[in-house]
Length: 151
Image: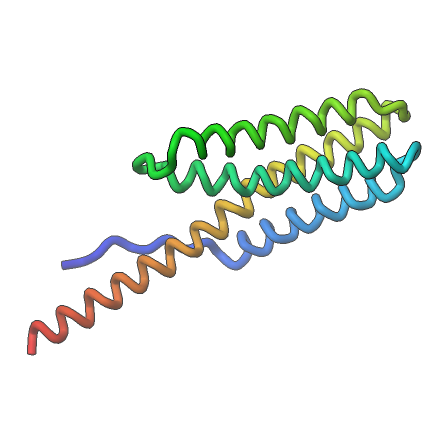
């Protein structure tokens, strides 16, 4: 019996995903490091970007974990979705209300959205790699078992 092929991401795809995430994080870091204005505004935006990034990873994991069947409680669903919505809303509000050049706001906004997009892609790529390892281990275990059964 032939088992279905296990699809693995290419090295090029993995490199692209990691480079994209690193570029997004670097661009955000540069934008926040040189953010004009008060230190309090800068601190708020740094916290907002980190909050958005961590909730995006949590949301990606939550959605993937519940893809086939619901495994989490409704309260955890509220925490994950609410945390992501709150992080994105507060960061967007903070960016909107800042009194800085509109071009700088646009730069920070695009970097922020690029970061969130690359987080989702990175989370999916990491989870896919984990699932490939599990599938390979399962296949190897089945092969060993059928080899013993045939003796």
